[in-house]
Image (tube, rainbow, N blue to C red):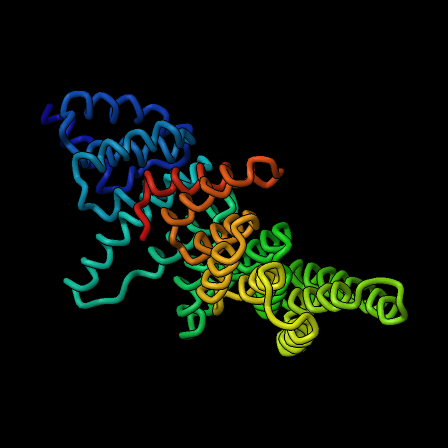
Length: 363
């Protein structure tokens, strides 16, 4: 047992000291035998995980490092290796759990040692959050990822790995927002990515496509308004379509004026108009999400038959990071709106959030 321990420690201290995965294949049985002989030794499982990583066996490596984490739950190195391996395997939710566990340990170590949190740690956490956001459609995780590393970039760390990861976060965030038809926030995400990647980047191309699409939408809405003004349709409905496109194009002041015109023309605010304003005006910006939630609650209080308001309320709560409350709202929306197609999407969203809560408790 002592011989196993000494040999394995030497491998670890020398960072395995052998070049190439082919030669390391012969080391893996030695490492496995050592941990079998000393099953309560966290360091042995860590080196076994490192060996398996080097020979291209990430699933076995993850199993080994997770056992190491059980034996040594306060090791930052072990938690970070678990997060990297989970990312390699596409287990993004596991990566987030391990990265967040490492975060508490790293922050405590930084306070104890009087230093800053390591940039490599921040990059790992951001990558885990962004990959999980893309895999499971949790928009708030993109925001959390960007907030972790934007200060590095703004503080002068313009290294390629920082800039590339930040660009990738904003690009994927924008793409997901477009897929959800959240065009105003998508424009902002693409603009931030373009600032990092330049006018010839993929983000810049996506931004041009989106702006072309929004110009076409506005032209159609304005033509409809002209026809409605000439008696070929309902003016209030046409004004609402223009207001919605203004919101989608982030032309907020013009949208607000149109909503005021509609409200005045119909003699006050009613539940259907309040619903449209909440969805397209307030829920479209991350700085007015709380107002959107308040407006949607007012809609439900004044007209409970507008059950789709609860579906949108759940989405707003999820974007604010209130996963438990959002999951409950999604499930209630699915029950109340069982006759609508979006009820299946509500159940799926609730299941995703509940899965996240089971692994990563969230306020």
